[in-house]
Image (cartoon, rainbow over the protein chains, first blue to last red):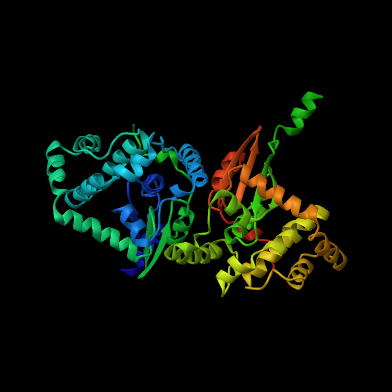
Length: 239
Length: 239
């Protein structure tokens, strides 16, 4: 028996699957970048069991005593340039919102994130594409993500039925959705998060927390895979 | 003639050399990481003409209205963990100074950086190895970099003669060295720098400013080369 087993696998590598949690908020453009790259690698990195963890960036920042880099104008200018370059290189079609402060500090992403959470609890197979469609609105087309209509349009593009949209818009207002949203936020904070994206790699009981979209070679290294750059051919963005 | 020229080069790629300036301060551990990786790639990326630009991180931060991340304790904790992991992955032997605040905020790196500048003006062939030896002291062994004796020891390990050490220790106190140090600092600030390392790629009259050690794939892309990870085999650190 064992010999048969060995024979069967001797020329193939048995994946050593590790859970990789991506904590994100669609208000964060670097989270979008990270999300697109990791979802492209899903089919390539057999060792990665990618789990999406929608949370509140605002609450993570508050909880960690951190803030967005908006208070250093020169840094903010750089970030916009950095996003444009990284977007071009990774084919993530960033378009900076005309009224960035309003989008980031006034409107926020709470209704959209609660809706993603509701969908994730009801029909998690839509979480990825729904998140992508909401990102495409706010960081790709400078469109709203706060009204029921905004959210419904993104949901419809993600293939979610009208009935499910109505159900999840209602569910998003229920305490169990807020509670799950808070659980993910607190989970990230307890792991040392101070912003998004935060990636947590689970490996033999050990948890490695990585901040940002610029350590994916290190993520690869931790799970025994190789980072090969943007993989633009595997882009899932269809505009 | 032209045919001969074409024949000679038909099977080789003529490098399209681009100047890549690395602005750094040995007080910055991420600058060390960036410096080690880029100096490893010097022999591999024929398109890169790497120039070392020692400057004052303190003055860049001040000039840009920025500060070190020490004021967010959770972020600082992460940075120490991040350095340990990145150091291991890239074989850069980071050792966090026991009294980090004293090293960063009190002692600083000014005498060492002025000495590097003096050496760079007199004998630039030693700039790279001298910088490495000073980094090895402060970020690799938790040794001082402020006294003449500290600096002389690093210089000696970099192969600089006793006579030249004395000459450059004196020169480092002269106004022309302070002036060149300020020129590089102002140059970085004028290009939008707000910390170190700052990389500036010169390409057909256009200048691309990149902050941090985590965009080297983008640097490669800008100069028409490929980033292949840490290249640990090419490490120049001999302890």
